[in-house]
Length: 381
Length: 181
Image 1: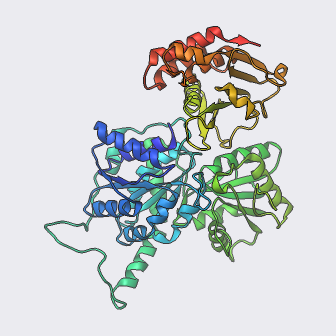
Image 2: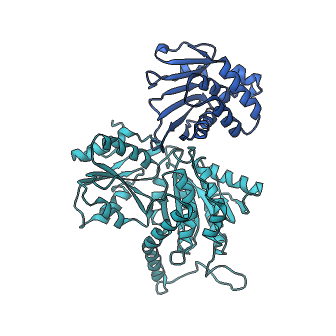
Image 3: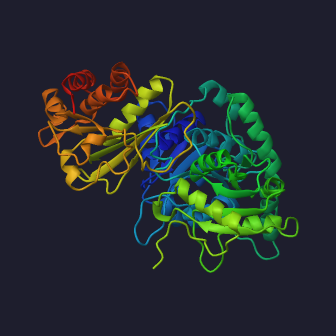
């Protein structure tokens, strides 16, 4: 099945009760599939057609806050339009799960893969997961609800899959057992929710001497402290479903590596293929894949880079006026603790194919210690 | 790993062809991926689709640049696109047409099949928009030994949403009518 079909199946297995979404390529087939499931009676859910992504996020925030598990999905300009509502969902501690099919941001208009749309949402208070396979795309929906709904966390989860490279790619996926999934997640149980019998208000005015700042600190702490819970939940998930989710990061051939790259999402697969190929030629290279990007797995990266001679950070996104966001996160995680050269590479914007020869070039650049290359597979004029 | 590249036009079913072939290999216990490259999603626009088949999990996710086989669903594309680009020297090429003027054809194993007539004979599409994806896979089964004819038929039956029997017939007829060159 395709990545988008796998996501829809993950939503079904999570027994989501409200779906509200606005279509945008390449997310559309997720919502189409869910609409079909609802229409056929395969998914007992209310499907709300909305006029925009801002309304989609506002609708699912409202339904979730009444204690009903809810879901939406978007891409690119859709997620940008949702930006304000993302802060509201996270700030009100609403444990939503949303899928984002990563697509470039215009202009020029472009429907193909790139991760700038969700790296833009880094500071909204949502946890972020970047999937590498369609199996992960399905499993991460269930895992996402489990973690988001944990009462020590109560923060929403954004689940990413790369445009076309996963969303429209068919590959074998094992559909998890429906009964096991139902037992795993149970029903949504919120201690605080909108209830006619116990009226309460969410998101009202908070003055400078109110607990506004304390609430923000609590939110920040919940995200930091989620790391331990996430690790435990991934282990439990793997045991229960005989699944193969990585930790917050996946270390690939890192044991004796001299040089390594950091990647996120489906482009990591081709990176692994390249690492295997270069290992066959005797080159000691490896890969650190970010499965979670928020909370940022700083300690995992610190452990993984021990013994490396140099590290490269691969960004399939773009920030202006400073280096890429993952590069900054990696550097700040290692600052004063590990002193190795760290470089960053911009790849695959606007769906440009990321190939084996591109990864070979990045590794060769790391090995040579050449500082001059940072854009890969770009025509320089 | 065995890599197949499909060249078609929007509406002919190149993407579905890549999926049916992947399903056929999956039925033979292989690891597979199948994916399209959309330019503009419009009827008639050139579409490329890809299938990879291997004995282990497939990690390579870039497009296919050096295919083992190329499948051309629309001969007119050969004036626009160099369909044999990167095709391995012992590669396979299947063309929807009675014959063709392939450059360097001698290097490759070539199969010709009139998939358009076979599709129309079986009621798949109409003369303006024949759906040739299942017929062309019958030709693929004849020329390549990647998967068996039976697996292609089973995958076709499982995958096509309607006219299942007609599609399976088209596979069989194309298999019988393919000419090797």
